[in-house]
Amino acid sequence: MAKQLTPLGRFLLILCGLSLVGYGAYRYGLFGKLARTVAPERKQEGVVSKDDFGSTSSTTPGSTSSTRTTSGPVSGGSRLGRPLRVAIVLWGGYAGGIMANGGMAANKNSTFYKDFGIEVELLQIDDFVKSRDAFRAGGDKGGVDIIWSTVDAYALEYGGLEKLRPKAIMQYDWSRGGDAIAVDASIKSVADLRGKKLACAQETPSHYFGLYVLSQGGLSNRDVNWVFTDSAVDAANVFKAGKVDAAVSWSPDVYVAAREREGGHILASTKEASNLIADIFVARGDLVENHPEDVRRFVGGWLKGVEMVRQNPTRAATLLQTSLTGVNSLDDAKAMLDDVKLPDYAENRAFFDQGGSLVNYHSIYQTAQNIWRKIGKISSVEAPKNTMDTRFLDAAAEWFAGATTVKPEFEFKAPAKPQAESILTKTVSIYFPSGSSTLDENAKAVLDTQVVDLAATFGSSYMRIAGNTDNVGSREANVRLSQARAEAVRRYLNTKGFAGNKFQVVGNGPDKPVADNGSDEGRAKNRRTDFEVVPQS
Image (cartoon, rainbow, N blue to C red; front, side):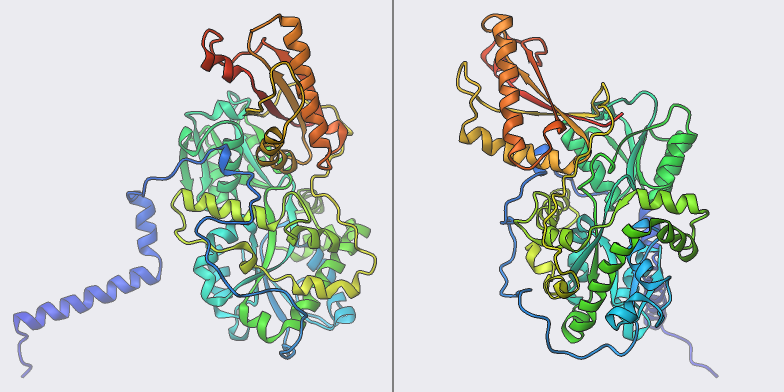
């Protein structure tokens, strides 16, 4: 006959059962689902403002010192002996690799194999968590060796991947319209978002894009009512259903939502903020250390594929349609290509060179890291140089002879006219000597830290430089002075490499005050320069 359990035995049995249930709930994400349902108490977030973006300082507050280096030749290790496994998602930015591979499967008829001696298997893993689980498993164990990311997202997730010693190895695209903010009919500018409900998937490129646009338009993260969704698709859907006033999401869902909601339209996108969301490949540390030659050949083959896309975009679109799950037509595939820019070899070199471009890997990573830290999403930081490895780009030079020209990332073409209205206005205090329109070194420093980055990030947009004064003196003299000061700003910005016709100059004089001219404080606020981002019509 079985012996009856004592009270202590029953207690221990129940405790063991609860532990198993708890582990199961944790393992399969139940706690996360419950947390999203009951909206747990969050730590107080810091305020993100315009001053948090645009810093290109090489020093990150609180960054750890390190003796690690990414310089030196690619040598040592062995060849991989199997196809390199790369995780991608439904996105037009992978056209270079799909073109070089002739599709998704590893094959010996590909450019990757014929010209670079490497087999590559591309795996479409649209589920973010599954893609990261595959990265942690590694290619030898049925996972992947390389994952997709964006620089801003990589800055957020680096700490969670640090044990794998990940390295950013190349940039495969810029988002050029793929990310956007859909708004209702009442919202005409960023300032109109104040107090409105704004949906997005938290801790994604959409979230980062939203924070950037708000801050440059004079708002902070606390000036809107965030509605965080489980995915970018969900954010677009809640906007389409009329449950929020605006949503940050990505193509094609954000455009469908704007089109299908009455009065809905796109306020801003990465078509205007063309140098903000940069997509990159991140490799596992064991791959980089044990098989560096395979990484070099992958980088070279992918960038050769970018050249092939430029030569035959129709073929690239056809491959996108037949290779990626979720592309319904050739027109959809062509639209996906239009939403991205595929950087070539020279542009990749410039992007990872801290002094090569105004907007580069270092500036984006550092800014994003500081933003995520400020709003409580990460607690530790890492110097950008420790998260990347440029040896493979350097060593791929043999395949790109003559590709030495560093192209500016703030490309601007003006086939169309600027719109009448701006989407955002950034006010900057630039002090001139009384009655003068000469920029001193302090004024230039302000422009370097607060305006140059804005102009480069909104690379494809016009910028209106509006000079303003207080009401001391005659109106006519103040208008002339404000015009001359705005013109001085334009001339200085042109020295940074921007096209001359990117900037419109306006002298408002005392006509557009933002404060009472009856006090010294009010007059000081009125002596300002406004920088307006104006999309093309």
